[in-house]
Length: 105
Image 1: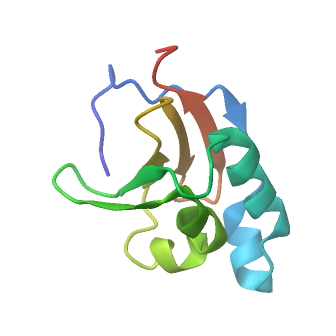
Image 2: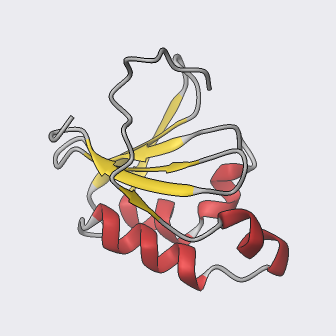
């Protein structure tokens, strides 16, 4: 997803490489990073945003446990946003995982 230069997704924390875990079919580091950065109850609603017009709403617990399945929709820069806290985690196309807060933007 291409964003303009002045967009609010300014990573504050870098995480593990999701692409490496995808290939090994293991996800413990990515799972832990998602849970620690989103810091929400498993039932709290979040959005998996992968295009300017397309987003899916799901509980945080589903998004963090099944991140691989969500990346089948798009792996070119999607992100998870928890609207109540402003916390987000993004997935870069080169495997980088990054996190930040929209409130701090």
